[in-house]
Amino acid sequence: MKKNKLIPTLVLVCVLAGHVAAQCKKQPIESLAKAVAEGFESKTLRDLDKQKPYSGKFKLIIENSLADDNAPDRFVVRRFASLAQADAWLTRREHEELPARSVKPFKKCAKGVCTFDFDGGILHNNLYLKRITYSIRAGCPYLKTIYLLDGD
Image (cartoon, rainbow, N blue to C red; front, top):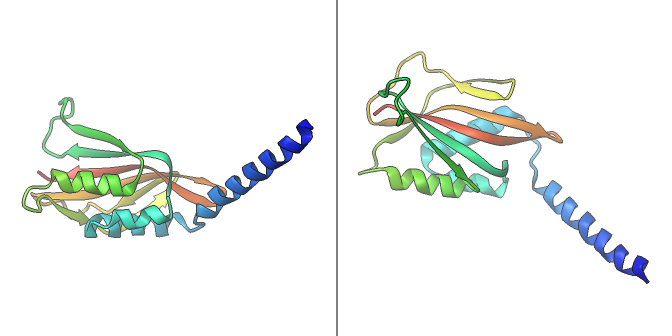
């Protein structure tokens, strides 16, 4: 009798596990980094939620470029369960569409970090995508942290 109840439970677990694996999009991390950069700049990060390129919550960190190294307000750290939530929070922080969202040229991804080329400096009233940290599970890249730099 107990075996009959166990079989439907195992089938349900297998179906749910297959559904979770199906959400994973196997792609090079560079493709995901460039998609995040485009979504950040165009304020359409929410569109990436269909792929669910994160596992659980991810972190978003904004560094104040004018703050001293030991200043308590140098970093703003938030955790989000979706890119749509992060995008909405960033939009609420804007005043008259400033700071503008900017992305420097993509540099590379290696050892869990994707970076962007900041050799040209930064401008006032711009929020820059600085770097992304990631992990890879079963061939699928997942965002861990998105780092932004506030040009103040």
